[in-house]
Image (cartoon, rainbow, N blue to C red):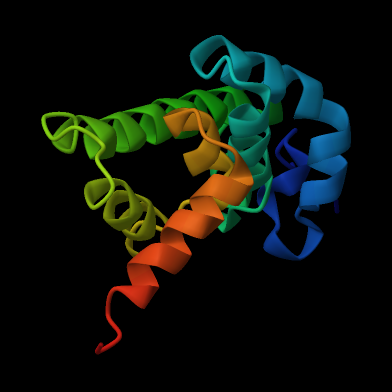
Amino acid sequence: MSTLRPTNKALDKTNAVPSLSLYDRYGAMAYGVILQIIPQERLAQEVLVELFNSPHLLNCIDEVSDAICIIRNARARALEFNKRFNLLLSSNEESQFDGDSLPKLIFNLSFKQGLSLEIIAIKLGLSKEATMKAISQHVKSFRKP
């Protein structure tokens, strides 16, 4: 006797669709959604990688169709990224980026907030080398003379 099964193949956790196959099928669509919110290609790619590395993505696919789940998650992650980063920058916007505050800001964004150096460099309009040098300057400020 056969039983009725849901049309969504990913309902069984043991047969869950791997992230790589989801990326192959829906990566371009998700990237397009993310690019509409985050127009910088590198930042959009970072969010795309985070999206398909998320274990939450497989849980969501259990509830709705694959495409809907990926579109919702891509949009939510892009909006969250924009909001989080803009809040971090706006909180430091009042202070001009002088020689002392910029290294501290970059250090905080990198080590305390977990943003990559590429993202920080793009958003602040600096080179990756300049961001690394700013972190080095900030760390050197802890040394005793």
